[in-house]
Picture (cartoon, each protein chain N blue to C red):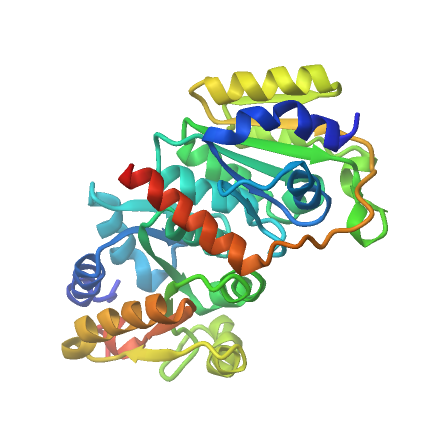
Length: 171
Length: 190
């Protein structure tokens, strides 16, 4: 499986440098290494979800507890979380760092991912969620730190879109 | 059995734990008994009260966390039972007021009115301690025991579909949220 283990490790280390101690996740192909890294890390609370929207509540609980967290999910998981984002994170001004694998975009071979790819950015825009791309290894660390900082200062969700260029090693 | 009487019966014991409620009647009734800074009312995001309690309990394992859920909310997020059971924080107590109704939107019956058994679903999801209670006395005992116990517990309380006349309280959502977090941070430093 050509998911980049090297780049996943850089992303994971950047999360750790932001003092993130809880990640909620629902597995998808591009996230396998990240989830395994979290699972192997005794300092990290990994919460494997049944559905991504749960992660919005879990992250809010972590925020109340004073623990920084992140959600790892596919863009379809973001779609499944929208009510929670609007009626919890937005309504109650909860910082929420979301790492979203951007499936269904350029180079996507799986037909079932393509509709979700079409609507991911329009939905983020409609929800007024600031979003940025993780698309080059040399900017990963900085962007994750900046996104975490913005989520916390603005008390709102911020999304980082994990792109094929970063996550997938096959050309 | 009235939900308000259940809440009143355990209210004195809620002082030293963290309480998360769902929206609607549960929030309004607990608030009517007297708001405390350790109460958080999730006035929307149906289904996520239990997830919020799970997040709190995983991050603060020594702290007793009590979630007041409802049948309508839990039915929207049944997967939460399996996630709670997977990590089974020992000091998380999950109370589900089951009035078989979406009361605050006009009393439309939920699936528990036609036989869906939330205690059975909780048990089969792997929640280690489950119970259904039908009297205020048994409610009080079950909640008190669970709060003193050391095991994730789901208690389904069968209550009448009756609630308060009004659902909006004078506590703003953001005031509640900031106060709740500040309260938790003060526990950590004291």
